[in-house]
Structure formats: structure tokens, C-alpha cells
Image (tube, rainbow, N blue to C red; front, side, top):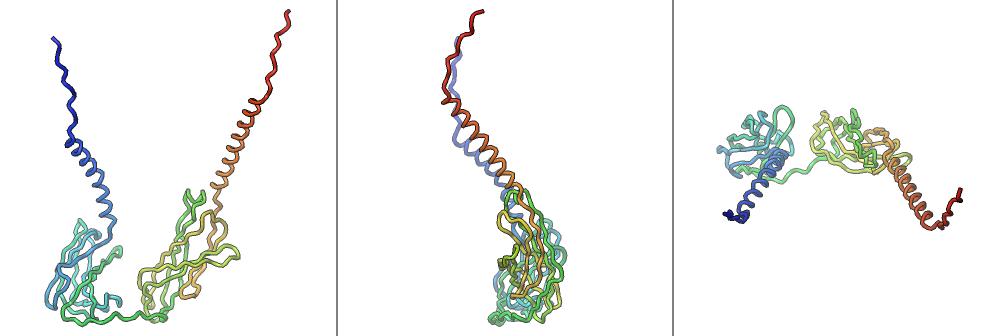
Length: 302
């Protein structure tokens, strides 16, 4: 008795879709986590406006775990530092293990007029901060003051070039370094977000300048470490001079000896050898093809 052969059961489309969904979820999970980890500290308030005597709830995410934070209501978008904040009514909070926090903050009038912000900043450890726009009901509003320029006088206390060349630089990639300078403010006004000019020159040529803004404030009589990127053209080698100036005043010059990209030379040598060998083989094949053939004679009988 012959057994009946049943045809193979076709795969259902729903099962295929389910498997694909599980695969996509598995692959997307680490990507989502990495994107969340790459975000900087964030904060938000329960309401955008409140009057004096009330409270608002401030929540944050993506902060450093166990970090101590301060919460302040500041006027003039805090362009004058904490002098524009209601320091006496500020609050402190410790970030949880998951990088989040929740804290109630009493609403008080800052010493400066609005536009106002709620400023959240770390107290110890690596510096991190975030500002959230907030309106104090009944508090006066005034245009932001114009920044005073010309009173700051910056000078460089120390300078160095950080970084090293990689494998790609050996094959002609643009050399990159980071110019690290310690800048002191000898003037009478703070330098806010100063714009430096970084230039690089080779031999007798004049330097080509590039503007770079450093985010931060250098108070009078204080110093800060400034890091600026320096990049040369592809294939550059020899003795270079990195210059830094502020307000058309030269602050420092740092020499930079750039090694020759020997990988490019090696590439051209190998290319010449390969091309020469290929041309030789092609020529020998052509000669062997066009060479006349001679009839082979039979050896004489013994």
C-alpha cells in the first residue's frame, strides 16, 4: 500500500512578517540606545509661565548619574552669569542612576529683567548645563544689553599641539592637530564666546586664517583652556608654523614638523613596477605571436 505524499505546507505571509519584525526590533534596539546615549543633557518645565510665590516642576534626562545640580531662575538669558539669577531661591538636586531628575523650584523674581531662563548646571565633576525658557509673570521685560567689546585683553600663557598622525595621513590624508592654549583675560570686561583666528604657514608663504569661535566666558583676571582644530591640506609635509591671533593681534606661534607621506611614494613605486611588468608581458606575447615559424628538420639517420 503506497503512502500518500502530502505537498509541502507553504510558509504563511504572517509568519514571515513576524520574523522580520523581530529581526528589525533586535537590530534597532542597540541603535536606539546609542542615539539616546549620544544626546546631551536636557531639561523641561511643567509650565512656561508662573507668578512669584508659585512653583514649577523641572525634569531632566541624559545627565551624569549621581551628579549634583543647581537650579536657578535667571534674567537676561543669563548673559551676565549668575549675577543675573535669583541665587537665594535656587535649589539643588541629585541625579538618579538612570540620568533623570525631578525637582520643584519656587518662582521668584531675578535681579535682572526678562527674557528669563531656568538654568541647570552641574556643581562638581565634568561641566554640563542646560537652559529652559521661562516667563516670570509680572516681572519687567527689557531688551538684552549689547555686549561690550574692546575691554577684554587676552594673552596666551602656554600653548601646545595635541594629537598624532594616523595610517591615512601616511597615505596623504590631511594632517590634523588640536591647538591647546591657556588664555588669560588681562582686561576689565569678560570675553564671551571669543572668536579666534587660526592660521598655518609653510616656508615664506603668508598664513591662511580661519575663524573659530570658542564657546565660553573668560572673566577678567581669570584664565581658561581653549582647544582649537588645526588641519593642513592633503599631502602636506615639511616645517609648518601654526599661528593664533585675536582681534588682529598675534597671540602665539607654534612650530609643527609634518612628516612626508611615504605611503604615497610607495604606492607610485609599486604602480610603476606593476605597469612595467604588465607592459613587458604584453610585449613578449606580441613578439611571440608575430615571430615567423621555421620548419623543423628531421634528424639524420644513424
